[in-house]
Length: 380
Image 1 (cartoon, rainbow, N blue to C red):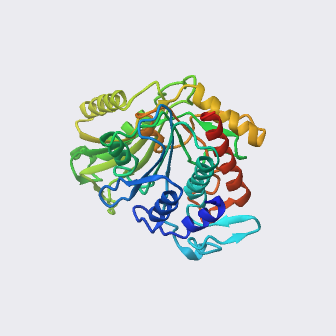
Image 2: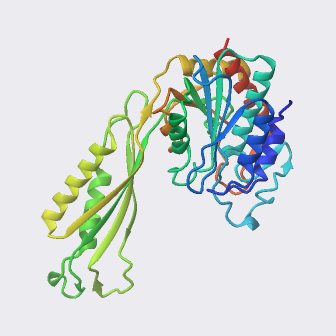
Image 3: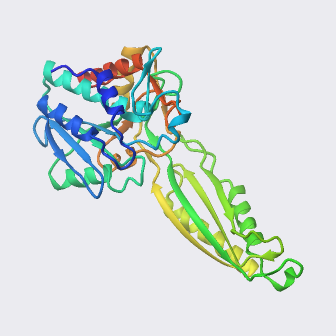
């Protein structure tokens, strides 16, 4: 059975899979992999469709894993695109469409590589392909559900690659060996409403919350660590909903996001935010409450056998020696790292989430070749 990664990318892009819509993409992959001799299982949870496909024996001594997603962010106004976001139009050597880069082409490239590998060089071991429909959303019922299903059914990976678009300028220039953690905090300051002509008769929560946000944003969290850039804190909103210019509002809300390296965890950062909030409340007499949401902790797969394997395959196919990086936002590698060693490698991500998202067709073919070489070397 031949699986052309470019044609499979076209077919996947034509599936409307805005989170959590399956759009036929999971069914397409399941049918293709089953026809190639993979055992396929559904790990659906809630409204999310998830696929686990295994070639080889369960609990094999060596099991190489791949993780990816077929869900996409909304395309926005289709009229701003030069082509239908779900038509997979080809033009001047590029394939256009929502998900073309992030990351239907990555899924297609690995599926193609895995199918050709097991048919041409059946390994002593197993390959597990896991694909979710909930990476761009809350991710509560996506890869997390897949790992819960695997644990309950005796499935396990020895090592895993996540096919997110990691390359910066040229395919093969960057591998992700970790990610910063991410958490958000939402504050509500409650004071006393009053007239702006008599501010002494009110307790202005806007002034208080603005001081707190400035204090937090001005604080230097760290200088970075061996593999991570410095942690950052960004205030994202300060709002009262107050349209009146002569009224001091009773309440004010603010939010921030922290991207943190391995010098911190969400527990220590939450404690710091709580301490600063309590200090500001005591100084001002304005009550401040806080809620936090943690998207993921920072993690690192130390440079070693897995990153060397992937880097060697990239160099053999592209001639590049990739940088080992931890920059960028979160990905489903944050779940996989709890299961087995994981690195991320995929396409150049410049146009992901943009209008006219597009992938260079030659890159899809080259990515499939890198993935195939990884499998050849892993099972050699």
